[in-house]
Length: 312
Image (cartoon, rainbow, N blue to C red; front, side, top):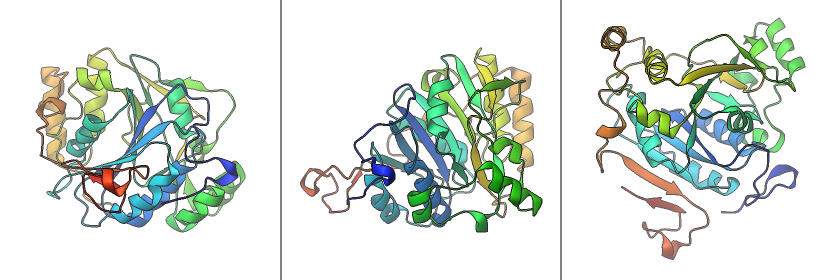
């Protein structure tokens, strides 16, 4: 399990100027191809001192061979949490990712949102204690996204000129969110977008994490945004610094109308803490694998040559 870093950066070197280690959580379901392109984009980050956690919402696809291949290209082992596929339960599996995370700060992305090369560095640089960074994304077409190995070798290649060209042809949208400038500036309150935000683990603990009662799509981002603000956490949106590229795709599940009722109940009660969240996690109620290429077969709990450790 050996791999080299393009431009001479080896697996064991921490680059970039972010302030210490951070965890990046990717929410996933099926579509291993786009997950692998996301892994490639994260493997090229200018700030290397981060761990990757795959939050797998019960995908029937086996991500393990892919994670084994990519693990040597990261400074820290890849963690993989998974639960049974019982429908859209993103909030529940995200809580399991927070539970196993090793660092005090966390970035949350969706598998179909590929990070700019300075994405982790700028989240780590600008996330302040008692605050959340809530950022935005550009929309691009899947056929315009390079394959995983091409991303690994040359990057995503979504510079301003290419984005403008794609926009002129109707192949990209919201391209103003895809321009990285030397100076960051903050916009007025925009709210959390679940595919691109970062927070402190201690602040997530205050609100008991994500609300797993939101068992379908939509309004779960508004819920956690509201509860953060009840806890006194400041939601900040930076423009032109923390960029990701959203790959357009068919919608997995139509919006769950019950979630709006759940959100209304949270607001009526002014409920800061999730009813079903981090505190309700039970040992053994999810699968947990660690992909660490530095472990030898004799030191692995699984006792195989695969480089992964089954935890539960």
